[in-house]
Length: 263
Picture 1 (cartoon, rainbow, N blue to C red):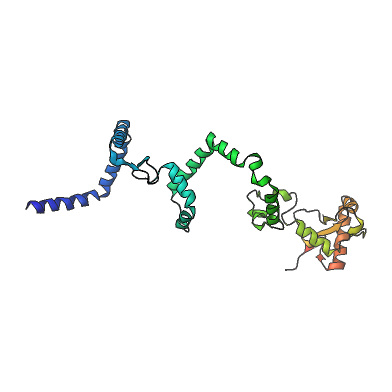
Picture 2: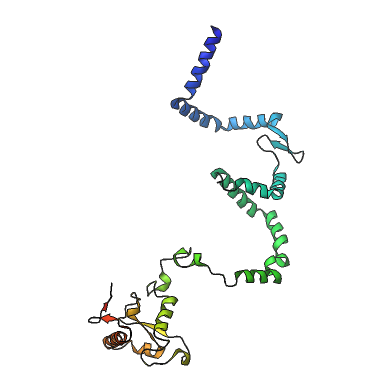
């Protein structure tokens, strides 16, 4: 009868402890209890006195806590030697958030340490800096020569600010579009007929209706700088002149100084 009673009480206690109300009460009590400074001091004293809380490091004779296998210095040497094994273990896995935060804190403290700064200066400062050697510079220049960075162009760039660098023009008014208009006009000014080879500067692109936000082939013409300055006066006459010229050459359609787009 006594043994049956004991078994019954054990099963009852197990079920009782699993209840959500009991778990909440236990967590609240533990928070209040373990935050008490007196309790913290007692636990530390017990850890110092009790030998079971510590054991020897695997590589040296220093005392180490039960949860750790090596001391800090030995752990650093172990990771440096067996770094590839550790990388293979973590390949395809995600680091836990607590581990990432601890790594960040440790790195920040290490960078602030004056002893670490002196070591880095001795290792990489002055003549020891590898980037100052001619051999390394030649290797870097060969590796980066002709290398394009499409992942850093336009909206993909972290410094992208909504295309404000193109203002007062729109985003489409770039070097590709300008070169396209110059090729269409055979690198010739559409007013005076002077070729690019005879000019000092490249042909400028003029917006026919003076709307800089409308950068399309039907609204743009290549001009030399002197002719481009002339277009600032008598705007209505210039608009009608360019519309008739582009209509004859390229078959663009216009109606009352407005562009007619074919859909």
